[in-house]
Image (cartoon, rainbow, N blue to C red):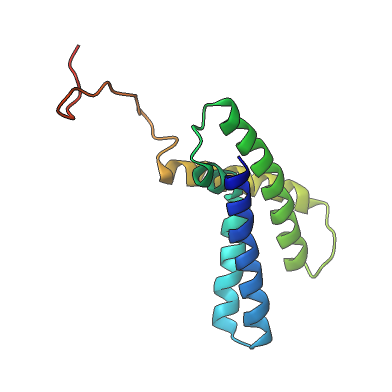
Length: 133
């Protein structure tokens, strides 16, 4: 669990550091990429942590990673929205943070194959072919 959450946190921190460096160097294109990376790592934080931990999504540890990752992701996303709103608190920021983390995490889970529709476990035969019942 710690590996996944620490790895996802490191990716977010690297994106944040890149945005600071890009701003200091007045590199607008790099700043824009860094901000995009901040939003991607913040909103998909739960799934990134789960994938880096290599835990089964439907296990107890996987659910704990998703819950802790969702809490961290909402916090990071809320902070990013606060910064984008001129460092002013608005009523919609926490609601948008929850919605963005939910949508981005489901999207990231689908991309990584965790929520593939019709996905079923197969019993594999000795030659790597699915066994017929």
